[in-house]
Amino acid sequence: MTIIDTHAHIFPEKIASAAATATGKFYATAQTPTRPSLASMISHDGTAKELLACAKDAGITKLLVFSCATAAKQVDPIIDFIARECAEHEKFLGAGTMHIDYPDFEAACSRMLSLGLRGIKLHPDIQGFAVDDKRLLPLYEIMQAKGMYLISHTGDNRYQYSNPGRLKKLAEQFPKMNFICAHFAGWSEWELARTLMRCENIYMDTSSTIGFSDPETAKCAFSAFDPTHIFFGTDYPMWDPKTELESILSLGLPEEILEGVLHTNFEQFLKQYPSAVG
Image (cartoon, rainbow, N blue to C red; front, top):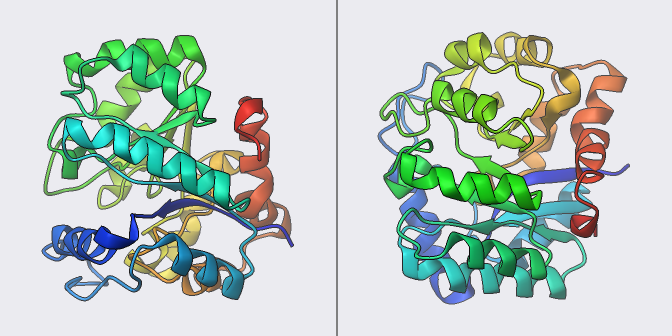
């Protein structure tokens, strides 16, 4: 069976362990009803090599991989790294990144496209700027014009940078651009997400959600949104891909919905971006 993981982070080997640990520390203070402490959440080291091994073990056949720039100077190296990994590993499909202080959005977007990267990943809460900051609007205008999509961490009740309302506003402002709003469009803001995030150009992934709620609440998310706009994601290295897949399978979703979530929804999505299909 084809299974596509649409949310996996990878890092260069020399910094992978530190980067994965830093991500875990960012979330360690988060409080959720079912996971009161996330201090030991990191499951893996964040390298491409280990991700590929995990994917093989889980039966995952394709992965959308990316990383996130916490400073403008990191943008180009990350783009180059992701492009190299995608060229080396046929299982990988990549997305670039951007930072609000980067000096030339147009040039960066053109370079990403030349490398086959049609998406850009932002994590507003870690990067420290609002996803709808007016300084980013020129970036979205370029992305919309060039046929690129945005992947954004969405919804953290400790911050407002990635509030679901901000993403909904952007989706309405840029109707010809697609938005993949991670974590069911509201990582720790699920109820707000379910109220707001119904929009034709909003998609979402399942990463870092199923384990943060009881099974019935999690299952309801698949009926709260358009089921054709939901993608499977693991949030590697924070979680183990095989365990995340088992969590989805355990929900007892109807076969047609499960098949869509695991691969056909994203395959249809990619048809809008032919140069990104690999």
